[in-house]
Length: 390
Ligand SMILES: Cc1ncc(COP(=O)(O)O)c(C=O)c1O
Image (cartoon, rainbow, N blue to C red; front, side):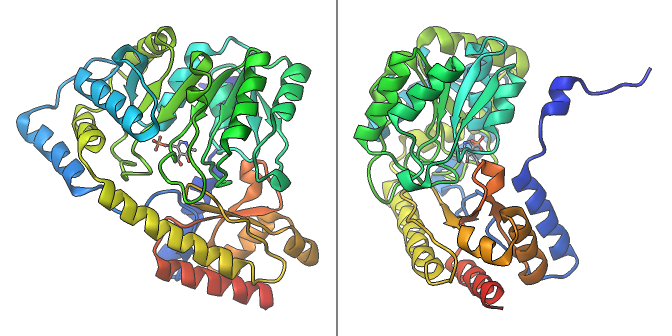
């Protein structure tokens, strides 16, 4: 007998972003001076009070199993944080703790998808969504990207796709990775109205919800809480990336089901990280978080200014998150290559790591992360200019 992975596991794709990071690391090991704008991880450390709360948890011996849905202390702190930060009012049974936003998405999909259910996925989308849907036996239906609409689908487009495909659900991610898009209240209202008219549930990934430079964050949960599951956490805002802690909020019955799935699959999120997350929710870190936002904003403006001066490249200012989605279609037509080949050549020829739009279902575009210092960004832009002009 030969042990083989099943069809479901075989269908799960390797992460393109991880593959690029691996290639960049390999070049670095070979002594090359690689500049990487590939990773979506803040360059700031975990804020000290949060890290210290984790250390104290270890010293106190808070290192045991916790309830599967998280400690009551953190679930309560999360309710406070949701309300203070986004004006979303949840009671404790409507919020659970997970080991990061990614598992929150997984637990939510495992709890609401019936086999074969179709889920609308507006492109460009974050790389993991199609695989997360497939793992839960659903079927992704990709809506074509609409750069001319600022990467935000209209209610009419959602409605038409829901009708055509008989979809059951919709994944939203605003501020978007990779788009940086932040819909207006009116745009979000139209999307939610379409979801309501077509009986779609909404899974709203709001992990970048506090990283906004233009506009305001409007959660679909504020408009249609009965059909919305919200994913959030401190990975991007508080650099809790390695701590693995996040939240899922929504109707009590779904959260209870997601909690049962989690109890069987992972047990509980790390007790230590949960103690740190209580501090992230309740400590006043507004000055530090504002400092970070200001730094990202400065980098964003730098990229918009410099990229738009490079022939064949166009960058619409991202309104949130920390990614610049560069329209390279003109340059690609001139070079007669696609975005994957462009990113490959940028890495091989000028040692600049970027991510091709194809990974996010938006070919012709390239994603640059600005979760990296100004010096690195300056070096990156110089290399991009050198490549294009050379
Ligand atoms: C849109 C989006 N959702 C979720 C995640 C994963 O977050 P976490 O590290 O909390 O699992 C990321 C990380 O890149 C992301 O960009």
